[in-house]
Length: 110
Image 1 (cartoon, rainbow, N blue to C red):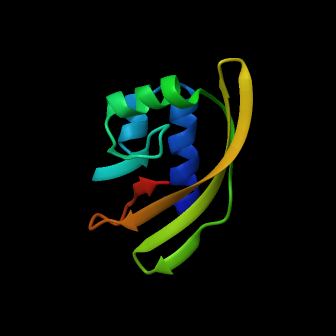
Image 2: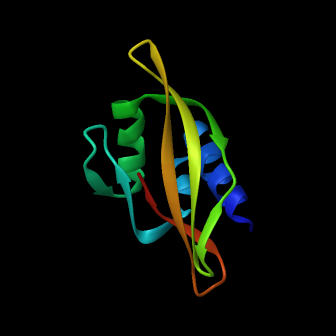
């Protein structure tokens, strides 16, 4: 599956609150940042907490991926969230790696 599709599918799963499905797009030791900017190993619970801490995902725009090597890539995503009746928009950077099964998986979101 193309890199951009992986990232779009991940955010679509998050938006629909399908946290187990969203978790499957990560490598086993994938990481995300919490609301305080601390690195957290991703889990289904961590993805659920992200909604509580950062707000409901209203929308996202996935840019064109940048290949860093044959087996790693990054992609910028613009997120729109609503938390405590306030909307905010910000960018995150998704790092991906090509696994041995020839599937792209997310290693981190910063």
